[in-house]
Length: 322
Image 1 (cartoon, rainbow, N blue to C red):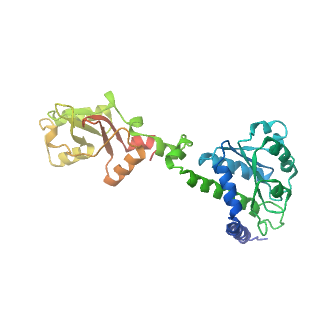
Image 2: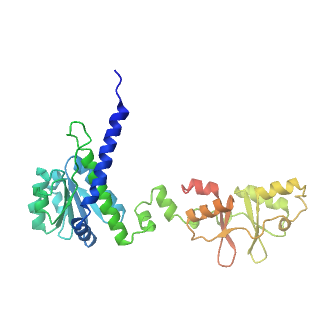
Image 3: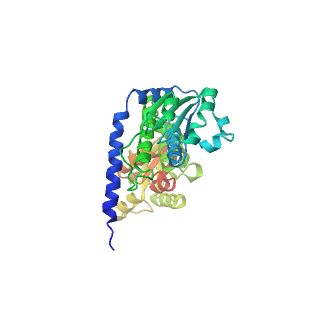
């Protein structure tokens, strides 16, 4: 028997899209009050939820933490067995329960009140015990679950996650959180590398920097290029200031012109006014420059216009920037 999986999946997506669209009606004064509590919080935003709400809560806590709002998740079952010691009066506790009557969540509210922590509830029932006992309630009600049985949390968890994202991003923008701030909490990922890595971290310098004087022969420049393996060499004057660059591309051009590499001087065939950068430039910015100018190598200079480093596309690729 053939079953139309696509039609059933489309129904699920339609229901969940509708659930998210209907969330806009709950962006009211309660939402603002909840954000203001979290924004003014001197401690952490502690997220608590049971079952599927707990899984969603874990993700919301992670999103908050990575976007400028210090946060972590506490399981309500573990909270009753010691983990409540993680919570202080300076914290704001975000309690999640679709029904608003989850026993494990409701049971810890008296302790939270005694601690003095502010409480923000997220539930699908504004008249629930959770809503009534909390300082602020954000409604996340949905008309129906995407599950055909109406039992498995589907549209409700999607709505909860979307509302959590709305809170996190609203707080991010209120704090003036920047891409650089985001990178500080993601140093190990490709995004962190793009936002934090500077040229001084990956450039070839010291003895690894290919460098010749402007009086040397093309042959000597080729020997230096081969020894350093960057497909290029810097060319300097008597003051060690950069006057040009010679690359594999330049070599191909002079070979077509039948230039004598044994007697020819490098200053006659080098590329003058080459593109340069400084050591504190972000690697991602250098990548943009190289792509725009369609060049494979970049020279890093100091304030005296002296070459102190070099890199190519391969270096950016190895560093995870490309």
